[in-house]
Image (tube, rainbow, N blue to C red; front, side, top):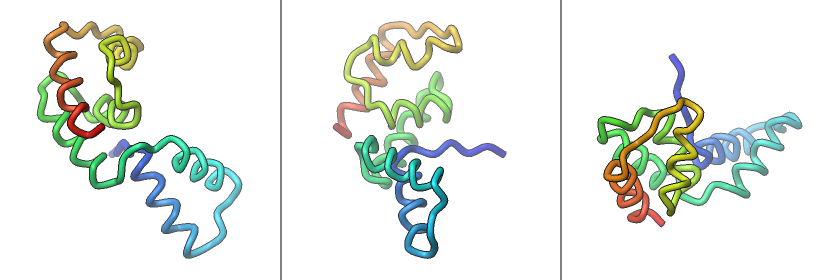
Amino acid sequence: MRKYLTLAEVKEILREENEKRELNPLQKSSLMHAEEFARLKKEDAEKLVEELMQLDFVDEKHAVKIADVLPIHPDQVRALYYKEKIVLPPEDIKKILDIVAKYI
């Protein structure tokens, strides 16, 4: 079973692992990336993903991506769904942005 992880979760996992042992170059690079771009704490990211997934039109994959990007504009939300050719109505995009706004 596939579990999607936010950058905040990846950062915490890799930091813990780094304390136990030397990370390989790919893991070090991933840790650097997560430290640079994770904008929420792990707990907040998890809460945000949970809250987003309560919306019937947001799946885990998109909830995690939204938590990583923290969109503030409707076009940013549309871009996250563009690959799957999903077009969300403006009222659904507003619901997503309202939830995200609580965490910024």
